[in-house]
Length: 447
View 1 (cartoon, rainbow, N blue to C red):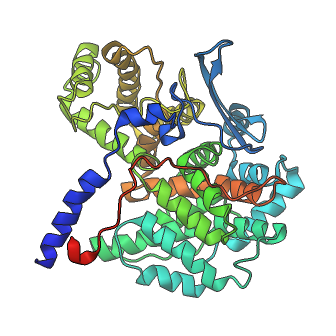
View 2: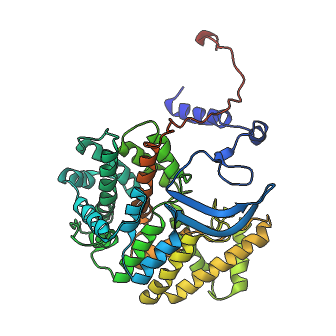
């Protein structure tokens, strides 16, 4: 038998070996995807870090949709973000301090923390050379490999004491922007034949400013503040999102920090998680080209109807950026991002595109309710605006998902630290029900 045929044969056999009838999940009361029948997540843990709220439970059963809320360590994200926007300052470092420590820093604590972040932003020469030598056109893959490489240079890599966990957390938060910026500039050089720029991070700049400086040097104050807000909005999203849960599962085995974070990166890389903003951006460009009149509601509704009926665009039946696992009436992150996105569109001369995106948001929600007619309340999520914002800032699609990781590394570290330090910790080990009959072994000669 030819070796090439074996792959085909195995793949065909895999088709049968992986088939599990849907009715079996109901028969054995198995929560597919750790989701209840009403779509809510199965409760698998407790946390003091983040809280995602999109509905209320009705006494006697059922869910009541409510405007979405997101809390960081008990603080409403809207209050944190509005303070940052109003004062026209950078808030990512403040949020990182809050999520890591459990309390808001005073001015002295925040200044010292910012200095610490700044001190740890530069990469060791070996790490820098490693990024230059790494081949590949996916920055998330390079980021994961770079994180695993950091294990080599950490003399206390396996130490899970509180002091060491916090040191590693700060080091990762500090170095993610540098790794991503250098990895993209290397990709730009190796794949697109552009000049190679390795700009060293500058002192006294915020994380957002330093990232933009290292990546493309020139940026406006509003560019940096908008990117900073995006980092704030994506820093944490409860323990149940796929990548954070992955970090907690892996951490519960007491493995090292770098292995746990690399696992989280692998999860976030998936198109159903961190890659959604790219799908929205691609969809938006498609709609710009295929909707002749950007103000014509009937034309937009007709096209969305075709998309939902799997007759247009990628024929998936989806409108990307609409709907969320928890949020129903609204995603607070999308509302907050829209505030600065409107200002940025004005600065960049993109007001017509922004108005089109807003109208698309309105009509997508309306048509989803009309076509699907399933009684489910949906809203836009943060991905609906984030890709457009990244493009206005001048950021390439290759780093959209890495930017998500640059923000979420804070939440990952906070959840890993909690997983390794609460009193009732145990290795996470759920069960799977085997639905295959026992078979009698047949010796090789008789097969």
